[in-house]
Length: 115
Image 1: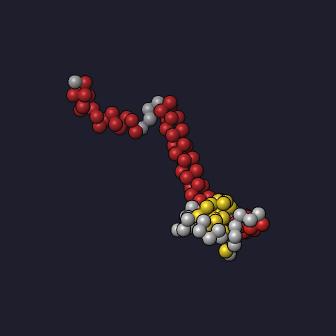
Image 2: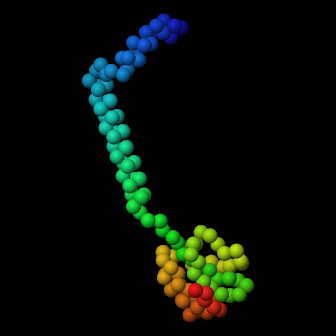
Image 3: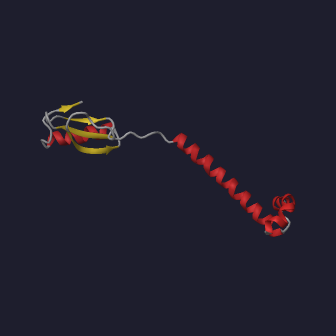
């Protein structure tokens, strides 16, 4: 029932909320305003860093089970269609994957190496 009594004063009560009347309300509003400015600045900085950092491709070394041949695979997330065994994954560069493949050939893990 209280809302029926104070319902006529709703427009004035909302006006009181937008304009701070006490020093404490003004300080709180200034603090919230500063936090939103900081949040916007952090968001702009994060978007700028995302645009600058290049995408990273991971490489893998796979061994095909039917032939025993190995090769470096350009994307470690996508897999070959044939039956395979993953020897190494998430190599940072193509050269690192090639070096791991040379090691596998030296230790007779693979019959042949596809480039």
